[in-house]
Image (cartoon, rainbow, N blue to C red):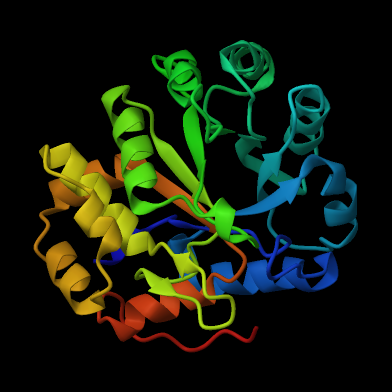
Length: 276
């Protein structure tokens, strides 16, 4: 099962609700990579904070980063991350685009400055032009970035909306990265806010259902962790690989929370706790 979760958890420690200071987030990321290995994806950092990040790196292996940059700031950010030996540019992320024309501009910039081996994700709007933006991404090497939560209830798409967006991506062969809200493996209602949160296992199962040509909404609504775990255990390696080819990763401000959930469900072996 470990292979199913390789690289799934992008380290978004700098972002809400965690908001870790850079001085703490950098050594914590190194520790996570040392303890959890390939489960941990790149360190997500806004382009405007690259200099601050470098100032905290010290000695060590090149620091793997996924840089968030608007189209106008992307060339300088890619140059900064690609030419500094202390950084390893492993992904790029673009803020939400308003419409197809904006998406076309973003794709043109990405084509012009991003190395061929570096993936990028463009955040989709949650409006009627979503499919027009996806039509622009279709046939490119770029992924869609889906916002699955946040600090306000309205930032959480319903299971029906999320299933529709996943289906729209899959039908165009556009892979997906998710951001925000997926702190737990299984759908639940947060006791502090009262917001229903999607689970990342729910998203995996929904993607698998869509690949298999079956409805996805019920999987996004599932709150039985044992049922989700049992379904995933039944997958062949090929089936798991197909699901991960669509759902590539998600950003989480705490990598430990989702990993601990998988351990509790018996989907990962118990590991020594990493200090927060």
